[in-house]
Length: 286
Figure 1 (cartoon, rainbow, N blue to C red):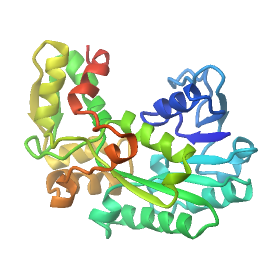
Figure 2 (figure 1 turned 180 degrees about the vertical axis):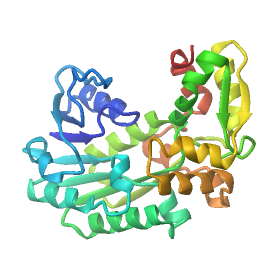
Figure 3 (figure 1 turned 90 degrees about the vertical axis):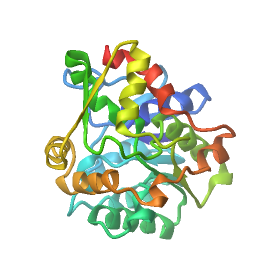
C-alpha cells in the first residue's frame, strides 16, 4: 500500500492515477470527502480515499495502516511559523511505513536562509535521520501556477503577474508526479535528492503567449507590482511564503535559472515544456 497526501491536487492527482494504473494499492489522503460540495475531489476507481488533516498527524493513523510508502506533500498551513510537520514522519514510522518521498523545494539549496526554507530543511533533516528509507524532491516553480490566471483570461483575456520578463525553468506537475511514483516504488532512488525543473527558462509573458497559442486567441499580459502580487498570493498561502516566492521570481539566482537534468535522469526522457502543459489544460482558460 502506498499513501499519497495532497492526493486531489496538481501533483497528488496524477501521482495517484499513475500508481493505480501501475497496479499499486493506493490510499489517497485529502482534507475533503469526495462528495464535499466545496471541493472538486475525485480519486481513480479502486483507490481508497481517507479524509485527514496533516495539521493533526494522529489523524493519519487509519490511512497509514498497512502502508509501505508515503508521499508527503505539506499543505500551506504546515509551512507557517509554529507548524511541526516532523510529527507526520514520526507517525509514519510508528505505523510501520518503510519509505517516505518528501516534496520539498528548490529554495532549500538555492536560498537556505529564508524562514520557510529553514523549516523545510529541518524537515528534510528529520527524515534523513529517521529509520526510514527516503527520497527528497526539490522542484522549482510549477507550471500549474498559471491557473491563477484562469478566471481573468476567461473573463477578460488578461494574464496578470509580477516580473513579466524574468524567467525560470518552471516544471510540469505531471513530471513531478512521475518522478515521485518512481521514487515510491523503486529502491534505486533511496537517499536521492532530485532537483526538478522544466526544459526551458520561460517568463510569465512567455507563459501567457503559450496559453494564447493553445487557445487560438489573444491573451494580454499585465505586469503587477510586487505589492499587488503579494496581496493576491497571501489569500492562499502564508504571507512569509508569498514574500519568499516573490523574491525568487523577481531576482532568480543562476542556480534558480539552471535547467536540471534530474527529470530526464529518473524518467529517461526530457521534461515537458510549458506549452505542453498549456495544451493539456487549455479548457481551464476557455
